[in-house]
Length: 210
Image 1: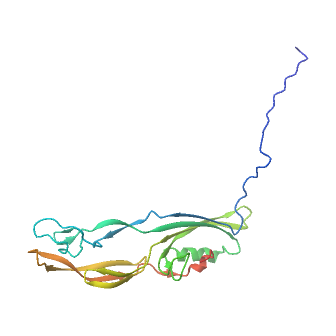
Image 2: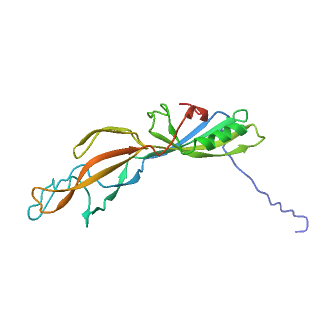
Image 3: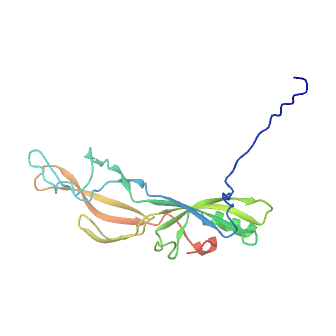
């Protein structure tokens, strides 16, 4: 009919009690973690638990792994490595040019004092990435860390009392000697060295608590 009108409209319905989440405020923090572990190449086992064949003994090679043609092949194993990330919303008054330079300088360093429940030497700072938010009143910065436990009382062959911090590197010197049951030269661990490969740093400079 020429006098008939048809209206087409769209209606939106919402729950009046729903409140959209607010973005993190300055001073807030977010955390994530992973205990997947890392890998390490080792040449000495904790224990030789089996030896099979003529005159074979678990004491033949002093726990050396993969003795072949006068060299130790070793193997890769999974070792405890705890990685985690923290996102902090820091005010612009903290995130100065000098502060950003400190983040750069601390990357690849271990903690020189207790930090986040880890003893000195157990935490490695992997670096940070950040961006300024909104009107520029604060910065969103993601910090990444890895943890590896300190160890003491390590024994390798006849060498005892070895102490190694989490991110130090340990290596073993072997000497070929004749074994009582084998008519050949076999490797015997004689000396163990622990190397410092990361510098230490003051993690309180990060301004994210200890």
